[in-house]
Amino acid sequence: MTTLVAGSLRAFIDATVGELKGASVVVVPTAAAFVGAARAALEIATALEPTGADVEALMVIDRAGAHEAALVDRVARADYVVLSDGAALHARAVWRDSVFGDALAAARLVAIGSVATVLGSVMIDPRGGAPTIGLGYRHGVVLTVPATSEQLERTRRLHTGDEPLVVVGARGVLTEADGRWRVVVADDVEVTRGVNAAGLD
Image 1 (cartoon, rainbow, N blue to C red):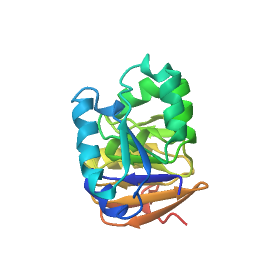
Image 2 (image 1 turned 180 degrees about the vertical axis):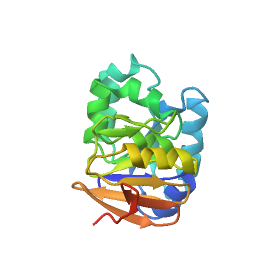
Image 3 (image 1 turned 60 degrees about the horizontal axis):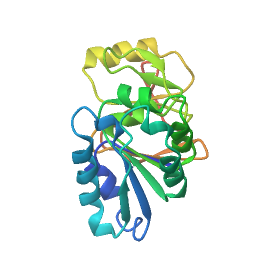
């Protein structure tokens, strides 16, 4: 597994019970900068305590932090990099065209909630549901989060690419390895191509 996408922190913890024991985990709360990056990092670290993982927060909340060599090196040495939920557009702005972003692209990632939407080449803009440019760290799907039926209908109509659209709600979990995606927990996961239901195989 090189990527795990979980709709919520609870879904992430439930999906990785027993797998993180002794692992080196860094938490990157960039997306939570507007609501409290330190609080978000602490919440994730506290949730991971029972796993015995060695957890460290990297407070990359602006463009300056995304160019610090020591933080890039720490990401490279981690077994898992956990990206906190929050403002996906802010995370995209901070990580785009940065050495820290390059390190994230090469890391084993866990993306919680809406931050997962920045990972692909196509991102669904949360402000209106239109496709826009993502970071291109992962390929094979376009990830988004639940929205109103009207907004999702608009998104499906506007998304004309070959990759399926995957809506991941709070209980959903997906994994990716070598560009192949798999639904681990199907609750709150909806896959479509255009307006039609689809699978990931």
